[in-house]
Image (tube, rainbow, N blue to C red; front, top):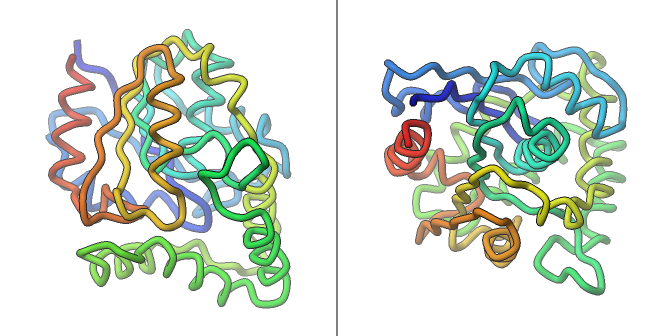
Length: 244
């Protein structure tokens, strides 16, 4: 059985960010990349995770493999839990159930840091996007090519997109899916960079330990975007999982 593959990108970008991975995947596979609400060409839907998930759900084929990265991984987890009949498997890249730290969740971004990003976005949205992208390349052995790929896929913070981008930052600040994770029954494969400074690998380790069927692959010398830094390796893992 070969499952159709759907790609969900992260905050502030567009589905164009998947181009290197799509190029590395077998062209015989059915692969689609979706713009998140208010990103790229997609219509905004407001600040609720449920509404973002519903907007994506309507574009998913039956029995698909959803590949979610960063914020897209959180949407994939939400969708898998609430619509298990539609999603057969998950690949989660640089994933976390909770993006900001709490007393019982240290493997995340400090809450004050993300709050500062939200404040900064209101004053200087384009500059905030550049800072966020820079964090995604830190520590990566292929930093220059990763940053170039991210920069070419940015959703501009113009009048058409600014409110939705701000909503996306709000989702990163407020979403906590830890209670759902033990109830996700689909097989899940986790891909994470060992030197991801935006989202510590310990978050992916927690997911692998807590998911009923979760397995983790960690890429050395790789930051927050392993599918850009190591597209061939990621493509090989995703292809095998789609055909398993």
